[in-house]
Length: 534
Image (cartoon, rainbow, N blue to C red; front, side):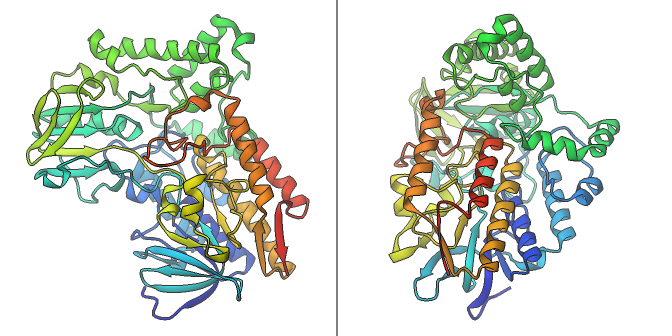
């Protein structure tokens, strides 16, 4: 739909993923007018754009779904332990239609910026289809939504198929009979590599940093299991929401020093056999906090990698050299076994440097490689990348991009000092990146809706996080992070995967339940840390 004149509304919601769908619904419940903006052709967010073969969520389907509607929980039935991309997209389409929010979105529309108007205390949002005048903005642009494109010399000269896992074509892609290269061995690469290897003439895996990955052991969900959870979904969701990660993990909740090696090994084995990164990471609860615990868990995972790879020399190259769980812990289906195939070659970019792409392939310091297809599985400019690319101007014309170029600071991962009437769902300084993100999204959307209800009831013209509250929360996030092994992290959790980005941990490691409790305290105290102007 084309916007020919500035539209006036109460709320603009940017993004039509889990956050956008629920936020538009909550705006309806509050009686507020709302306009949703989405650059894709339909709802889905991350699950609309990412659709490469083998893509699954690494949170179990019974957890990775909305909990706010008992009707939706009972009507929708998941069929597999870990949901595949088409199933998640179908689920979000089902929910959007059920809630009747699709009509509120302007699809195929891109937001280019937003300007705060001091005189009117409103935002003017610039889009590819015109401007929108709004009282509030809720950014639901997601954690992993802006791909990180590597600057490889000669990439524009490649004459074969150049693909990116984060913007995969909607049309089917065939690997059959082709020489294929995949650059990147994070979560996306680990999922697409085994699929490509099945039919490719030859597959070259270009590895920069090895990942720890566990077997997913995905399987159909037994009808009895689904019925059991549906019968007690309320209690099941309450257990997930009261946990540190926002999911049911069945941990013994004991530190390594109390467990001892035998019990720790037994719990790691049990959770490894079950197949779940959250359960495995929770088996020894201080894995991310204690060096001895981390060393024990890391050694366990390394031994498992070696047991899955036939060639010890190849296995050694696939072994990570960093503390486990300080980068994303992945799950896979036959990832390590793929390197036992004769048509698969590991190109370790720690041994040979990638020099350039050519019209027919790529070159390294070890020689030339001819390929028909080159796949970029190179990750994302995570958490802050999307908003930092937009021209968002707050009070006094202050630039969000410039502010976050020094430090991605927020108050509670939700609001930014100097940017009134603006919420950033699952923003930097929230537990979202290391949690079941749907729980974090529901926590944020419900809290935002509660604040909007209060603002409207009290005829508040504008709200803004104070600089002091933002500084205190950011200092607390950093203090918690620095008390853990995450202080050694070299990943998108700390922004170090993007050149020029400040090295700051964007994840609150205090856990979902304590974080939500703190949000409730802030609301109960009249929204402590905010300035409310009537």
